[in-house]
Image (cartoon, rainbow, N blue to C red; front, side):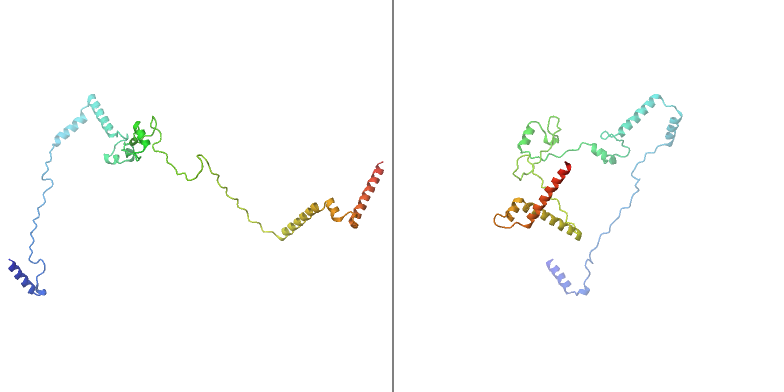
Length: 253
């Protein structure tokens, strides 16, 4: 066998490429035998009902009067059908098929859903003490006798400052923004300078215009100095005022 294969291989090897048979030339395929289609109603047995019985029953229901017992039975059947159409979970009428009603939002909300287990750490001391006293953490109920308390522990905030408990820090008040100065005209500048000059003169008179200071600065003539001519004017003015007073008193008398 091996020699025959080697001989065949040698023969094929010696054949030039343009004379070789194409790939898959000697392979034969089996013929596919198709099964003819059958009549779909051939295997089904249809129940033949006589039309005479149907017509007779229809005539009897129209002509004959129904008994009161039959009426009550019919009413009870209708009520049972209506009760069957009301959903016991959500209380709505099931007018259509059951699938869209079960997918409705009202029906889904009224159903009792299974709650996921609690995410609290069961190794904590507080959780262990509460469970030992009868509290069920997976029931999603609060603390207290009526189970209306808090369901989750209070969140703890990190305290980074050194203040005591309950101490409040004063809020820094925002500095009031100063308005920029209004531009000044020439008239306002001149008026401002005049006011400043008057103010300076008044301060000089108040500070340097005292009697003791004038006496100290000008002298009273005892040191051989001469009095200023302003002193003579003051004396003459004082004498004139005295004379005027005397004349006014004489006129009154």
